[in-house]
Image (cartoon, rainbow, N blue to C red):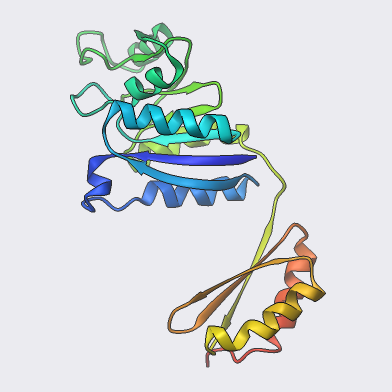
Length: 228
């Protein structure tokens, strides 16, 4: 299952807020065997949201959008999703009923709180107020991390794929000096290899088979200088 993640928010693009939602979603999706192939951040503009979502829903099995939910002037994500599907925003009776059953009277709610694209499935917000939505292969979640994480867990079973296994090897050598061993690793084992230099080089070995990943990592550890 190939997935694109879209995060919405001017504050993300301005660097005022760290995009922890994208990192968390990528980790959780990978744990479920889904492959994240795009992570894109767009501003709080209906046209940008609609354009990117339209492009990605045609290209990927699912699109997860986070941020910009609610009734305030800069919460335009639902309008962008509605525009992407060519649908109107309508008060969602099931979302409104759920909110009322959880202590929010209609008079308490700001106008527009329960408006979702026509035909969407409401995703209830256990940690906040603004509901999310699922429409075909597009899932729309809040931007507040606690709300986003709780809501994602309610739809997590809808993301599937072949589970992969990851092993990490740390080498206290220049990355360029490891290239011959990476080539041999590929020849010997059915794995993918990523290397990430810093004070040392972190080597990530991934395989669809747990034993293969462990065996490849053990082979490499015997052939690199590990930090003391």
